[in-house]
Image (cartoon, rainbow, N blue to C red; front, side, top):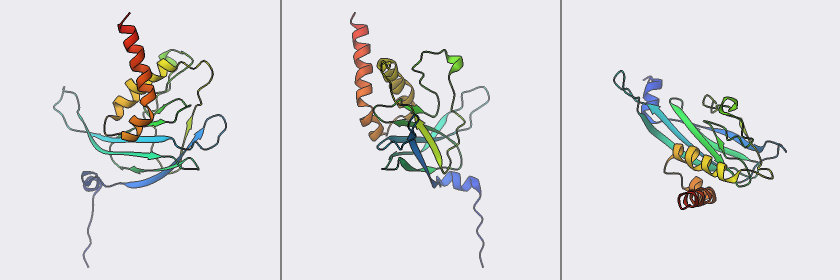
Length: 178
């Protein structure tokens, strides 16, 4: 009989993962959000000499669309860190790193989600946009915070946020041509 021991470090170096399930719901109605795009980037920090910045290395990227129950399935790598972006038109873009605050409160009131555990059964609540929603500021958040942190390849996320990108680009163009 041969016993093979696989250490956690060996799993991480092989990029091994397991899948977890979660769901996206409307924060107000508690109903499932169908067709939301979830994009996840997994990364780990590499060693660096003392005093130099610690570089990041991507080792997994995935995209998923919520089904008729608002459910999704994504890989969970047991080692490293992650960044998650979730987008559905008509809702505030969700980021695992920071919160878009449409009420204009200062940064001290912003909630930081950096330590959110990716776990089986997780439920993410999307806030619906309301009347008078600050579209340009939201477009900036989607383009400059979420999309940049995901970086390519995220073809589904890029496609569903195209309107946000155009809103932001038009704003920048108009601002620069005044």
